[in-house]
Length: 138
Image (cartoon, rainbow, N blue to C red; front, side):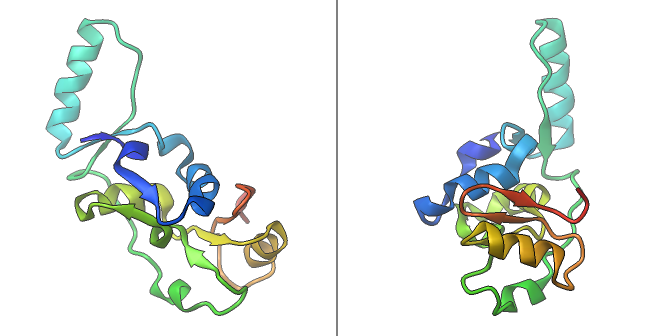
């Protein structure tokens, strides 16, 4: 299908930096339908000595469902799941869920820091609109 970053866009340009930060290393991953496609691509790339690539086969990647309770958060104001501020074709949902997980976006660094470290939400990545990422796991 293409690179993950090319298969989606922010619902509003103010979310661009936050989305880019959360997608991180998966941003340039190539989304394909089947794991067998990955095998064919890897053989071809090896034969032609191309640089290694990361693939996200939709029939193979394992994802954890979105924690729906996170959509109900009232504090801080305007907190959203990163997945909810991305426009994409529904066929790419699994790849985006794999890359974003339950990551949240907040307006400011202070709000993001508090939500990541002081709330009861376990190990959620929280990113501010400036692209600063906070995570309990490091």
